[in-house]
Image 1 (cartoon, rainbow, N blue to C red):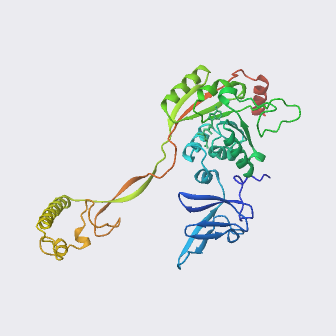
Image 2: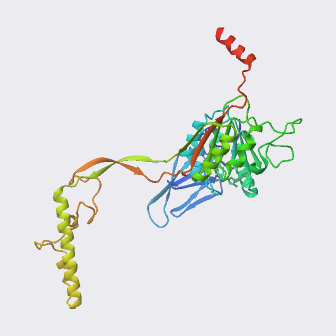
Amino acid sequence: MTNNCFSGYKDLIEEDDLTLIWVSRDNIKPVRMQSEGVFNTRYGSFPHKDIIGKPYGSQIAIRTKGSNKFAFVHVLQPTPELWTLSLPHRTQIVYTPDSSYIMQRLKCSPHSRVIEAGTGSGSFSHAFARSVGRLFSFEFHHVRYEQALEEFKAHGLIDDNVTMIHRDVCRDGFIIKRGDTTSYKFPNNEATASLNANVVFLDLPAPWDAIPHLDSVIATHEKIGLCCFSPCIEQVDKTLEALEKYGWTDVEMVEIQGRQYESRRQMVRSLDDALERLRDIKRHKLQGVERRKRMFSNTIDSNDDKIEKRNGEGIPLTEKAKFNPFGKGSRIKEGDSNYKWQEVTKVETEIKSHTSYLTFAFKIIDKSRDDEQFNEILQSKKD
Ligand code: SAM
């Protein structure tokens, strides 16, 4: 049993729990519950003691300041996906559309031993930590290393399956030795840690400088999957050169473009609508000319407004009459039964994903057959 609050499940919110308070879709706040604490929003204050003891997922309501209305928030259990949307940004981060795709392509599982460089804001580290057996996360920026280490400790990741290392991987590689700045706990007789990694993720400005160091820390008898996350194509180009030079194969580059399609209704417009629109433009133009003439001759009087609000037949232009199906005039509610509509698909623009290029490659260092293991497998099939 670990105190990793990102894996596992619990029903009720307890004192000292990390909760993610959902105020709105783009306003989710990580808050540690303290019975004396208060969560302040511009709508009012939510005392933690009203949240502690409630089931995760509850809606918490308060009366808003100075009015008789309600404000509410939802209190959610931390998940890597919600953490990505609420974490304190120290760097650019990897968002869920990318991280989930990368983990699926690299076949991440509890069997995976992952090298990640650099740690950055720890967004991807949380997603890896939930799915893989072991994560070795390297960061060369000292303050960022310390901040990530504190955060991972507070979330129970260090006690569970995450090791942090303060290191410039491009210059010094990935081997962890005694005396290094790391959270790695060396067993008594071990001088260097055995990483035996089978998955590598590089989110670095110069991954091609880190690639030559990988052979000494990846597993030799397995297919190793690697992904480099690079925002520009020139970086991809240099990475491809390094991958080829160091024997990586099955190289493929993809880009994730997060899109959500929603079903909407669009007004059907006829030729008559188009003609009416043209007449409308002409009418407005004439009214403008008339008004300017009157302004120049200083004849504007208080009746002008009334005149302008009448159409050619002297009928007052109500909001409805002013509407024109090509977009100007009063607003029409989508689906209004006075108009004709057709079903369309629209793209939702709000999905966050950082558009970087993902370069995948694979490598098997030792392709020789382990005859003993092979015979064992053969035997077990016969039995
Ligand atoms: N993937 C991270 C996330 O999802 O939060 C963001 C990584 S951020 C874009 C890149 C990080 O790599 C930075 O924190 C930077 O300090 C670190 N970095 C850059 N070069 C490095 C190197 N040679 N060795 C180790 N870390 C490095």
